[in-house]
Amino acid sequence: MAPPPRHEARRTTRSARATFELGVRLGAALQPGDVVALVGELGAGKTQLVRGLCRGAGVPDAEVASPTFAIVASYRGRLPVHHADLYRLADEDELYATGFSELPGGEGALVVEWADRIPGALPAERLEVRLEHDDRAPGTRHLTLVGVGERHAALARVV
Image (tube, rainbow, N blue to C red; front, side):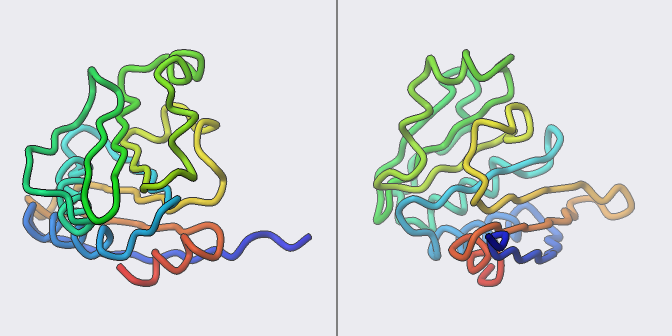
C-alpha cells in the first residue's frame, strides 16, 4: 500500500497580525474532521494562529485563549472548532481522561497546541504546523506546514 500523499509548505509572517491572518485563511479552508497539530516553543505564536483560525471558521469574536488548564475549549461557528492544549499533560492516560479521543473525526475541526507532547494521540493524517521565532528579526515567525493525507496535504497548499 502506498503511503498517504504529503505536502510541505513554508511561510513567514513578520508580525502577530500576519500570523493571525494566516490563521484566518487556514480557518476558512477547514472542513469537519480536519486535524491541525501545532508545534512551537512558548511565545511562538500558536495561540495567535488559533485566534485567526477561529475567526476564519466563523467563530464570533469571543476571547479565544489557550486552554492550558481546561485542556479543551470548544467554539461554535460556521465550523465548530475544538481547541486543545497539551502543555501540562504528562501522558496519554491524562489526555484520554478529558474525553479528547472523541474529538478527532467529529463534526468540527480539532486544533491541538503542543501536539508534540503526546505524539501518539493524534491521527497520522493531519496538518502539522511548526512555528519558530526568528531571533534576527523581532516579530518574525517561520512556519512549516506539513499535510499528511490527501485532505491535509491540500490544506498545506491552500494557506
